[in-house]
Length: 256
Ligand SMILES: C[S@@+](CC[C@H](N)C(=O)[O-])C[C@H]1O[C@@H](n2cnc3c(N)ncnc32)[C@H](O)[C@@H]1O
Ligand SMILES: O=C(O)C(=O)C[C@]1(C(=O)O)C=C[C@@H](O)C=C1
Image 1 (cartoon, rainbow, N blue to C red):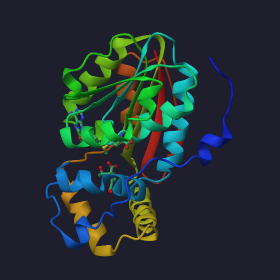
Image 2 (tube, rainbow, N blue to C red):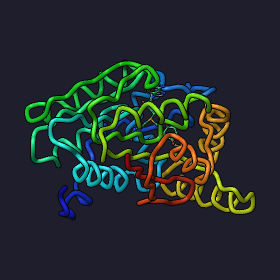
Image 3 (cartoon, helix red, strand yellow):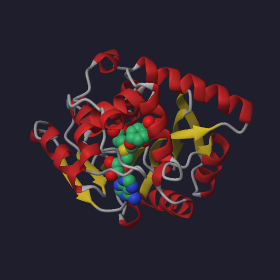
Image 4 (tube, helix red, strand yellow):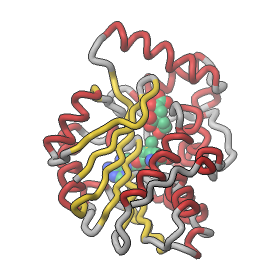
């Protein structure tokens, strides 16, 4: 295990495509929300302007991944999208490793393939186009699943977490980020306002925010932090902590 904190990593720029997300302003926007080709085209801009502390979360996940990586095992990113996390991790990990990205969207993985070209000179990179529920997590010491579990049907989430737990080696780590809801309706209302102010600050107009909210209804179904933690416990994880939380987004770490 490494105990080094790398301040540079928090200053390092993410590798993001520049196409601006104007889908919910100009259309055509997906309703209900799906990861179609239009979304993939602007995805990097969309997620980095829509998720609070996106860069910090990825940098934090890279630190945890480096600390819990067991040589000879796999590091798996579920819902890897355009490969932004794996690209960052690949630059940050000094020793060669096997980095696996899983996503069920082929257009996302095509973008990831281009993005990961350079780090492939150092690491073994595997991109798997498959739904996470059908994948094996055997011989992994780190599994990252950021902003993806929230899109799966509720009954599938528990099954997937169980299968991640079973695949991880003893001492392995799950790093999970999700949109969450508050157990308190009043706080939820306040947090929503703060979150929408965050989006407005990042250049989204009120209409864009409203349209996307409607499109995500019943597609992205958030749980409370307590529900999320109890799901992890039921899946077998022993120690759980939360390195980051802002507005309605949380990152959790869970140890096997
Ligand atoms: C919000 S994005 C994840 C963002 C990414 N982890 C990041 O930090 O940049 C969700 C991703 O999960 C993928 N996805 C959705 N359902 C999936 C499933 N059942 N199995 C695998 N990938 C899935 C989508 O194609 C999409 O790329
Ligand atoms: O824009 C929102 O409301 C979000 O919840 C952001 C969010 C996510 O959390 O996955 C939603 C859809 C896109 O995939 C990118 C980010």
